[in-house]
Image 1 (cartoon, rainbow, N blue to C red):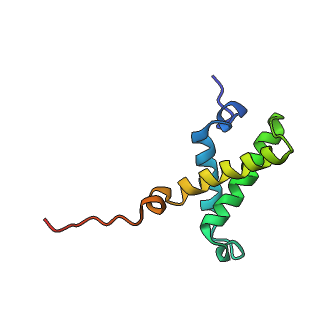
Image 2: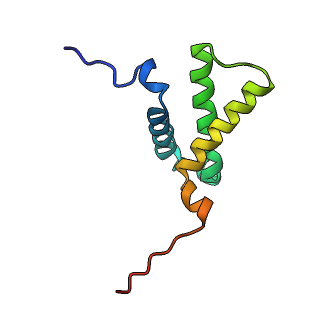
Length: 100
């Protein structure tokens, strides 16, 4: 058995792999001098928009209309929210009392 591709079209369109790819791109590029100045939440959203637009366009499922663009931006927002500690943002900072 020959294994040449870690990613395929079938895997890259799944939620989990998209999440991992966006996280890897952000982690790999966020220390670049120009990128350091951009807030991580916004930068993660931009990377998610780019990734989802590329995938949807190449699969031929991207609707270039108001609803299609809105869905793309909302889906990117979901990934950004999840990758930037969405739970903490939603419920506030949670502190654990270490006193026993």
